[in-house]
Image 1 (spheres, rainbow over the protein chains, first blue to last red):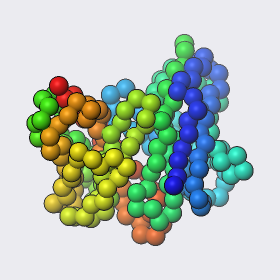
Image 2: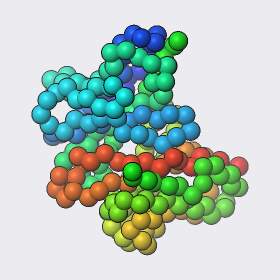
Image 3: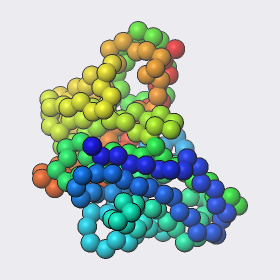
Image 4: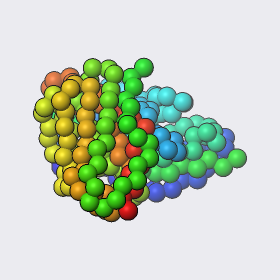
Length: 114
Length: 117
């Protein structure tokens, strides 16, 4: 079985500071890893994904994430946070050949303070 | 742009009512999904479909059924709504890749917030 853990329900950061949203995963095999963002009263939007290759993945809105196989982590990062980044962030994992595709974490609410 | 639409943004129903949630995608995607989202629990898969008239149970199918009569449309049915089905329901779709599927991101609708009184 595959699972995803987002250890922080809430992350607060000041505008202009770097931000990190943590994610760890558990799968038996090579994972595909995703980050999604949800703004209030909206569906989820895709941010970035790791499939293979370079461990540092760049995505939308200046976000990036680093795949660390030894630590089974896929933390989301941004060098300089914006107030508009405030949203709910979900990490998800899937396995090659899995028709069910995605297993989601519980979500982390990011608040960027002006 | 991929567009996934859901029939209602907000819905209020009474206990015991039959409830239909509709989802339509315009990108000719083979795979469609229904999730429910609850605070602290993330998204949980209810049902998914990989082809017309084909369906598979997800993690929490109890109390739900689905219908996929056309490729672009995937319906979630609550046969007899209960208060514990009050939740945000999200529909998603993605393209089928065969053995490599799992690589593609899913595209989500805006969600339906269902309240069962």
